Image (cartoon, rainbow, N blue to C red; front, side):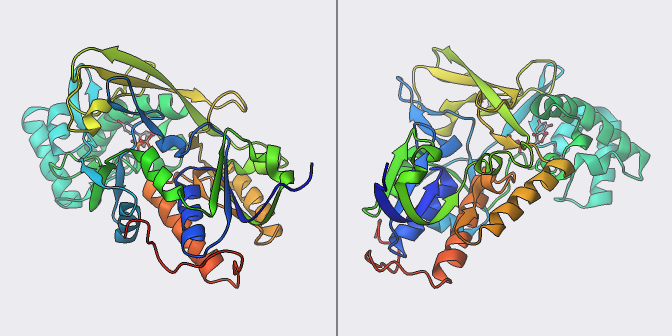
Length: 395
Ligand code: UDP
């Protein structure tokens, strides 16, 4: 079959990374963009949709937007208003709900009485009030009492959860992963301490839809890019899919972690104390999400989703997380070099393209940077399309 469409950029993947880049390329540089998405929907794993009771469901796990980047917050705020929301999580430990990340309240609950009080003081003295320390650092602490506290936290909060989530012990995965949830040396019980935090008022799907709504942007969902790549004439490609798939696994397949979701419907307005409850114990799931918490609206029915981590099997389930360790990073590097050898025709982006544990704000920031480096500062011009100089969608 011959060429059906001619574009400046072929963007593979309609998640936040692809949408951000497509929006900038079309809106600022006037590029013609085709976005191809293998799944049936836009928004990637941030995809959300209302259930029959009007509760917006985060279909692929809880997505709480948080960032300290004014640039990213301002950028997305052009496409959405925000529901104010501060994320708090509890973990069920020995039948009791404790704040996570572990903070000074959690310490006293784990070690009650004077012994706990002393540990809190030691922690403050060793690390400073308001600081944070990773559990893997605490279990190697020179102070034997703090080391014992580290071991207790490791045992009660991290070991079981991490074994379920990653199929590995905490010390066997990249330290940055458990470091995402450090021990907080204060009573702050927020899960994130970023300057900005919120949930898109009309949902992530609506936000991404607005980003992509532009006369220069065409979107194909439910289409694997391989099915159409021969029919599209494109100057360059932004690839946010699995980079090992792009190169047909020629260096070996990268490891990922997958999830399965089980929905539980209960006909009351809310059941859980927080939107997310973690289960580091013997249960087969890692956490439960109660979607109703993301909006102040009260409904007659609530949906709770339990998250069951799974092995990723190619073609069978979704690669939600890169499984980061030294070996997988090395393997990724081979693919990144492979992409570089092609020259600047292919640019890798997003959690799967970069094989990095990117949060939503980081994905957006990276795509903005890619746009600035590969489009704005390059000699690319798109004479065929209108050139706009700024975002005027919401002006
Ligand atoms: N973690 C844990 N127990 C918890 C919370 C987190 O062991 O109660 C560890 C676990 O290894 C997890 C990692 O910290 O994968 C990062 O947690 P985060 O909540 O950031 O994971 P995400 O929401 O990205 O899945």
